[in-house]
Image (cartoon, rainbow, N blue to C red; front, side, top):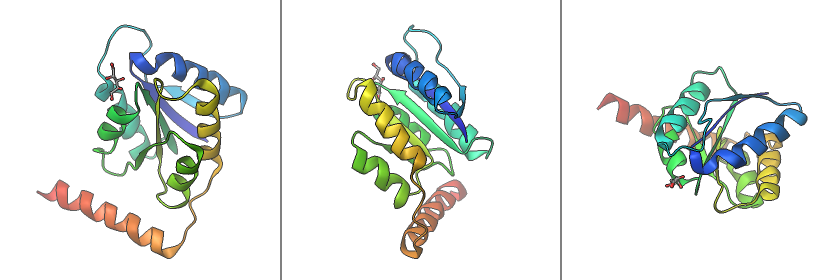
Length: 151
Ligand code: RB5
């Protein structure tokens, strides 16, 4: 599975840990930055990862900022992206089973490395349930996007 990953300065250290761990677990990761601890703007990296996933080049994306909130707000503006902030394992699983989330957002100031690895592991391995009611709701999300894009 190809994963696009990105962070701002606040998420850099956790992202680097995840890149190393994901590589060992056999995932193919491309890091869209940031690559330094210098203060930067999370929308730049959330947009790049969101567009990489929406284009179909990458199956999933992972974004890290201080809280996970800024990157999720940004990534969800990219049509086709369903980004979920997950700070607990139940949410990580449900975001896949019910929402077919394609971008995982983590908060480096909220979760430690161990929990972040568990969250990523569960999120990457859990399939979408495929239930019609969940598919219908996801189609409705896409309709909201289409209506916004047409305005
Ligand atoms: C950076 O200080 C911080 O605002 C950012 O990482 C993120 O938490 C925003 O949502």
